Image 1 (spheres, rainbow, N blue to C red):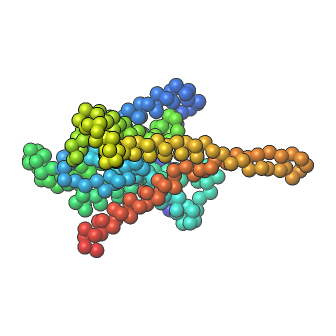
Image 2: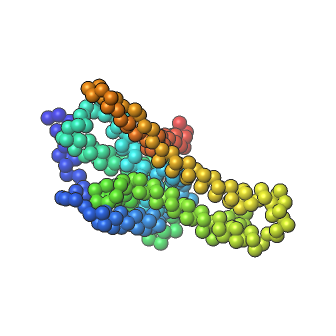
Length: 315
């Protein structure tokens, strides 16, 4: 029995979201998508039980790509899904795993292998953070429960794995029953949340100013004199600390991306069998979209995590 024949029964037994038997109405797709979006935001705001405030999120600087939220059930975000996809694509592309992606049987095997690899990556991305000491248990919680901190650490590990599994099936639900891809939905949701928070957050930063741009402007109007704002120093204050430059940059980048995404390059075509028959084939200017950036950031994040763990061990 070959390795593939041994693995296929395992892949077939993996839990999966049932595919729709017929056409899914747009209204139902919209409801499923909105439901998963609400569930995602809810899970992203549920903190990990027993997590210490001294814990370090290794993927904090990659949240725009990995979605999720620090210290929550969505700690891993879409990292395991993207990493599993990278590993399998490399193995198939290098013919280490020989698959014909035009064959339905090979496609089913690839999808099963990808899901199995996601489960593996959930453990491989959660366990090193705990073993490396970046995710630490709350000693107070352990004392209140009458258990050792290692027990609380195990509970945290289980919660992280549950969150990773949930986001996997949420992605599968959106892909089969919703609109678009769950991975893209979670990224957009995370970025949108950051934009809304950056606009309306009334919290105070270390400089004494509100974090959100609109509350910051209200504070400046109420507490900073117009004489100071009219000076060159005041203008720089508004541009940098007032968030005007950040807002202009964000809007400009958004408009540039929308323009580039909507731009098509028309390639002229000529029919060899019919003389005079000509046509044009439109190709997107940004054909690959943001997928290469996500894949590169996922690879970078995993290499950085491995490097930090080895550095912590003195290697």
